[in-house]
Amino acid sequence: MSVDRTRWARHRASREDEGLVFIVVVVVIASVMAVLAATLFHVALDNISTAQRMVTQEQALQAAEAGIDVAYQGIEAVTLASSTTSLHHVPCGPLNGDLGSAPSGSRYTVTIKYYKYSTATNPTPTVLTAALCTTTPIDLVRIVVTATGTDLTETARVTSQANIAPVSPFADSVFVNGSMTLRGSNSSLGGQTVYVHTGTLTCNGGGTIYGSVTVFGKVTASGSCSIAGALEATTQISLGGTAAIGGTVISTTGGISVQGTGVTVSGSMYARSSITISSTKWYQNYISTHTVTGMNVSYTINPTETALVRPTKEPWPDLTWATVKWATMHYRVVTAGSNCTTAKSAILSAKSPASTGYVGVALNTTCQVQFTKITKNLVLAQSLVVFSTKGITVESNAQISDSSTTRRTLFLVVPTGTSCQSTNGNISIHGNIGTGIATLVYSPCTVTIQGTSPIKEGKIYARTLIMNGNLTLGTEAFTLLGVKTTQVSVGIDFERQVS
Image (cartoon, rainbow, N blue to C red; front, side, top):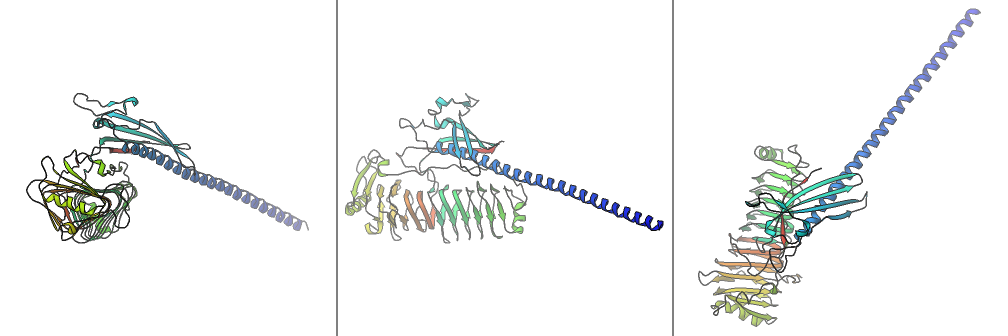
């Protein structure tokens, strides 16, 4: 009996020990789970905090860059003083502004410092006081713009250095204020620089540009498109087919994509966003002799680039009949209005030598000017200016030539302010303008170039340019006399986030 009691007591004690062990295990597990939960909670908070900090840092940086852009826009929109072209009015700073409200508000503060260039007699650049920034000779100035962007507790600072210079009207071979398209196997453009102010460049088929190209927008080069010089755009650059770029390719705010194995790029590629190369074989061949630099390069090669900045943004030059004092420039002025017979007579009079004291005929009309209907072969014995709000056409069977070795000037202009509805205000060149005639083609609407070398030298300024022919402008330093500089341009040396 006592033995059974002893066994029962031991069994009971064993059960109590097991229960105690279980409770201890449960307590330990609960403690571990609590620690893990607390750790995970802190990790989650840290991740949220890190994400929020990254967002606010990016917003602060964007605020600083916005301040930089505001300063440059103010400088680029400068109107030169009417009394002299050596003075200008620029923003003296500081500039302040607020951006957005969600997820939080950001603010920028910009300081602008102007310096005289260093010279032999003044080797140290001299900072100008704020009181002098509105009366500084524009050909002796460089600027340093520093912007601080703040978002909650985050701060980003961006410093940019640039030069200010007066804009030379009609300095580019081709200036497109909107979009430009080269299509067909015989589309070629030769001469100096090609500048697309705001829009897109589409080069397909066998389009060829013999020079460097700057585009404030998107570029698509496909087919057998060829650009002999450098290619710089502010947004996306897409290369495909057997497109060939003879220089460096730069996207200052967007990315670059290379599709297939037929593309040729002779220079290095730089992008602020990303560089995507579809073919590993193409990439391996290219990278052996070139540099690929981008913020998010598909292949891990130099994955950062902080020094890419937008190119100089040139203003579209306005050109109206009153812009140029034609009589002062010794042109015989003919104001035809809607009288198309008078307009035709004025054009035909350019076939005869100019009267003593005159260099040419300047016509202002609201009629549509069609050279085939006026004359199929206009042999100039003096310079000719044609302003028409309806548009100008040089048909395929029309020809404009020079009667001697004397250099003539031909202006084919649809003036600024013309309403571009349907075909109104368009210029179409399909005929032949001979060698030795410096030609300015200008329209705020659409310009279409067709045929084999329809213009030998000169410049083209258009909102939209469509090329389906060969155009070689040479290196003619053609300027529109009498048109004064009205704005300044900013040439950016560098722009970097410094903190």
